[in-house]
Length: 287
Ligand code: AMP
Image (cartoon, rainbow, N blue to C red; front, side, top):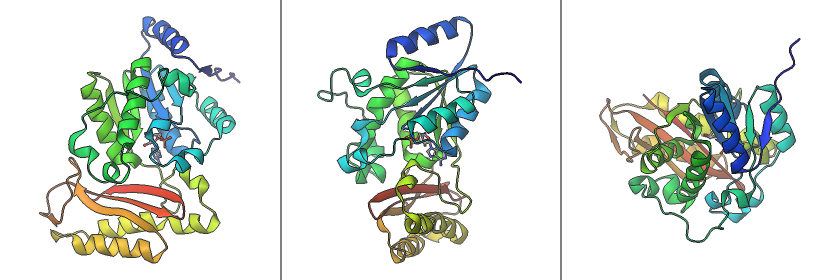
């Protein structure tokens, strides 16, 4: 049996850029999958998509301090690096980029760039997690400039983040092909997430209510007023012990919040809610 290729693990931007320059000079295309680790099948689906389209897949694992508006969430973010490396190796990932904080933020966190994200930063995740998307842009701009991928793969699970990164690619003038990959779910419908590791058994059973609320909304969607639908979804979550940040229906292309649906406009439902200390998000395109 052929021995699978050994994955290359690099920790500095220099080493990464050298490796990728050599790959490019051979004509290899580069696919990039940025993650914060604690990998699951959602992440692996992105690796598989990248491998299907590129000669070299770079996965980064970096828990980005700049994107956590809640210091406790950062402190408690799950880290499972040995398991992650085994999964990536098994998947045939060519390169794992594993930088330290000083490598990504050599000048620390003062005087960071400010990205003009406009409306996206004022609504939903932007509204409830102040500074979060600026932090996402900080790390993504830095990683993208290091990797300079032909193709970038991210998950629809983080719907608004995908819109932010699409905008960032324009702002920093990169012509990377951007692929939004479908949300991978557990058998009961719960969207896979690294934060699910922080749910105890009881909370894990309850967590699926987010998916059920989205599914209920999709099944009941009719042209007309939308408030009844979103109120019912919020009630379902609250009745199951969630503290709801938001449950909204929005234009699927702009994220403008909608109170009325004309029956044609593409719409998505987006939700964020706490179960105990753990904040879960999910979304569904409804039509
Ligand atoms: P994270 O490690 O949570 O920052 O996620 C890294 C990438 O994986 C992001 O592009 C996420 O949108 C994506 N991702 C996370 N969960 C899922 C999932 N359940 N299905 C598909 N992609 C996902």
